[in-house]
Amino acid sequence: MTAVPRPARYGHLDFNSPIAPRRADRLVANLAASRPATILDIGCGWGELLLRLAQALPEASATGIDADTELLDRGRANAAERGLEGRVAFIEHQGRAWTEPADLVVCIGASHAFGDSAAALTELHRLVKPGGRLVFGEEFWEQLPTRAQLERLWPDTSAEDMLELPGLVDAAIAAGFRPLRVEAVEQSEWDDFESGFLADWETWLLAHPGAPGADGIREQADEHRGWWLRGHRRLLGFAYLTLGRPR
Picture 1: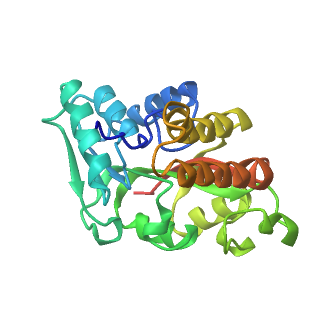
Picture 2: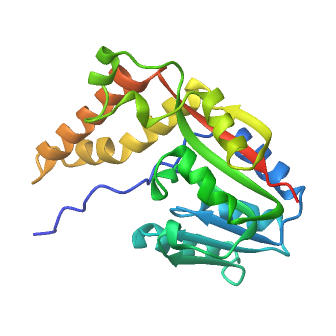
């Protein structure tokens, strides 16, 4: 009997964060304009943004670090496919322990490696060379949640877990950065991201509705969808901050 394959991981997503293609293209173009020679992506996953930056900056060296070996392997395969394996390294490493600074640092959805948003920004400041740039992608509250709204989110969520957008920018300034661009994703970008995340489970369930473990995957998918549609949709935002470290 042929074993039933497990659902894919992030198979329907180009990026592991909510971002439209037009925003990704603009972000890459804006960052490439400063001509960084070294790029570091902390919590890179499979490093799609890192690879696009490397393509736009043929003289730069790029390093992505993450603790997820499966995603790192995907990044290495993509780098080889694009002819970038000589300039882009994917390294298994904990972000908080990294010590080598870079001209351009990317940290998107990975602030938990350092603690909260403010702590992450403080720690990341030491990894950005003077005159360099940081792209900080982070969730924020569109408005402070009520107790009833918190109860519809994932377990143990509190209002203190995230900042509102003005507070997030204030934290970046307090850490020693200057904000060069502040942009928040549109609802369609969130919806595309959540739909893509869930698509791995849903397409698998359509093909294997009675397979061992299907009930658990179905329950997991329905729970996640509830957190999204009944919980954080229009409550939780996602921002991309392009920050500069003064010389």
